[in-house]
Amino acid sequence: MNTVREIKSAKNAWRAATLVLASLFCVLTVAIMYAFSTHRVRLVTDAERNALIAQELPLATSERLEHELAAVLPGAFEVTANEKDMAIHVDLSGEDKSQITYRNVVRVFARVLSAVHDSGYQDLESVTLSAAYPVDDQINNTTVATVTLDRNFLNNVNWDHILRSDVFEAAEKYHLHPILRTNSVAKVD
Image (cartoon, rainbow, N blue to C red; front, side, top):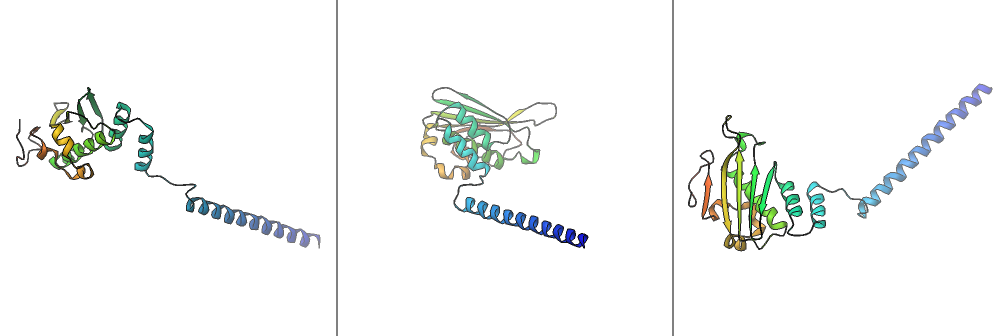
């Protein structure tokens, strides 16, 4: 008879433990759902996180520009700037050779220009963009594209649609390596 009571009390203990755990699970689920629905807890995307970090950095500073560029560029970059002119050199050596096309270089340059604008540099006289890639195995990196955009372009560009723009069409002077050559759209150096 004692063994039957022990078995019943053990069953009751397991039932009680299961009931307590299920109750805790339900309470935690409701608490988490409430936190998300009231935006007390929120998941952020990488873009949102980068935007929050960028808001804390002062406008028109090298730190802000480097943060904006790191968010949009796949590889290394180098920025040279004085008061009114800026040059940004992008290293594309990490890209696959099939990705080094005219269209992709245009997209990279548009993202760089957008980052320059978003970082607060809005009164520049000119921006020079260049991209390098190891064209031949014997040569480390070759400049495959260079474009200089003047103040007229920077003042008149539609920044909302910069990612759809062809910066080479807007430039008076640019240089393309033969691996990127397409139909001529501007004056080639």
